[in-house]
Image (cartoon, rainbow, N blue to C red; front, side, top):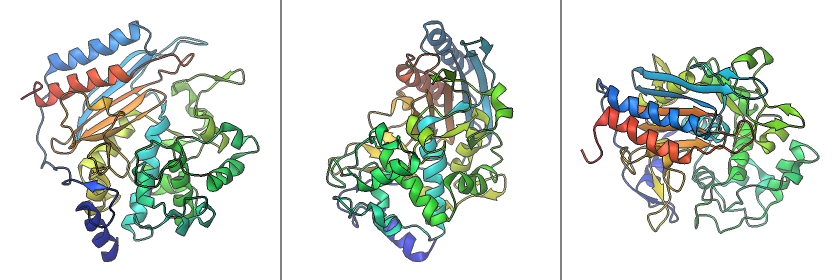
Length: 395
């Protein structure tokens, strides 16, 4: 990253350069510790997941708990599929990550480009995508899209994609914001679809190719990809039916599907083991097992919380911190100092940099008919796992 880029990033962190964001202190980073999990508390997490499966909240799940050093607990529950056939869940099941694609694929890519001085947080989106700069979007910045503060609508109509992905993106370029940039937090797939196009333009190749080359392959994430091949389908968790066939290795999100399976907001498939490697890279501030993906300074910029001026809706440049989407934090991980993300298909991850640990819960709760519910489960499992690692609430 260039010196000027880091100088700008430092200004963001003290909340001077951009008035719409209030920045508190960067997250605290621990130096690493040999956490010894309370097995009784982990058994509580197991029981909560077993009960949720029995109640039909999802067909199955894989829970993964780890530290900067590696996985310390991993277990499969229930079934990978219940229709058209019943298959047991296994720890190597590949899941449709849905919106976990935002931090794992898109914002990681954006921070690598930032680190290289090819992308600027303060730059207007129109600098990279001139077709975007119209109808009140002229002043929207890269930073605002990463924080979901660009004022864009959550989703554009699926009808915009009836003539293909290019038509859908063109409609986004012509769209009108819902709010003035920087005044509201509105979780927006449209914003991250736009970021996917920015990565494509700046990197000079599609998002999936860049992410594979710069993230997944260097980190040894062998089962993480967009548009997985048919050869892996025997290990994939199905979601719902589309046009009379089961979506197995086919992205569930309809807009990502219209975009050919590669989009800034959705499209990635992965396993808990692969995601654990990505979490460990973050906890080790940009490197894993001797391979550096981005600089330590880039990771700290990436994971510093930002809030609206009233102190609400904390996000980092890719992660949730303290919003309505924070259920995986539970009651034990520290508010404002830990971060994570969720996905519509039933996926979630939460990371604690101070204690250098993480929890991943992958489910396909939309299988078989889109009626599963795991928001409450994420909260109680997050609490139980955090207590197993850090002690009881209030300690």
